[in-house]
Image: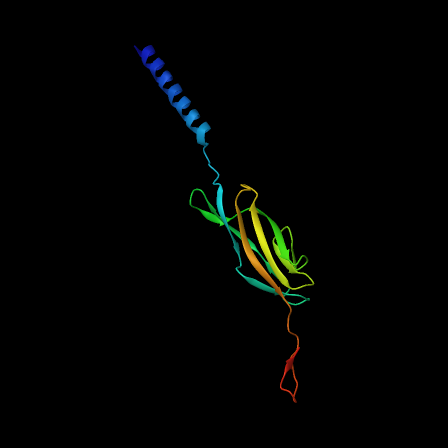
Length: 141
């Protein structure tokens, strides 16, 4: 009888381990969340042609399929109008070019390349001086 109990216990333990192995292979023990959306910040920044206030650091904030949020691993790209208005580094640093314009910054998830986020950066000229014509009252730069 004791041999029968041992056999049943062994069969039960093997069945439990087999069930656990099947469950683990379907989902795994530690499921890594997949990014489902990306928000790019800061919003609507203006940087200036020249050597002052000419950069802005962009960040990507992800929402994942399990509802969690946090930093999302991304690759950065930029589309500037006109060409040369701005550039972006691999780390997300946007730098003004030599002309004024608008740039669309895009963050593409490296985990799920179908998920992207965008933000606009404006490149303007910085006013360095203002002159007032005393006879006409006109303002000139």
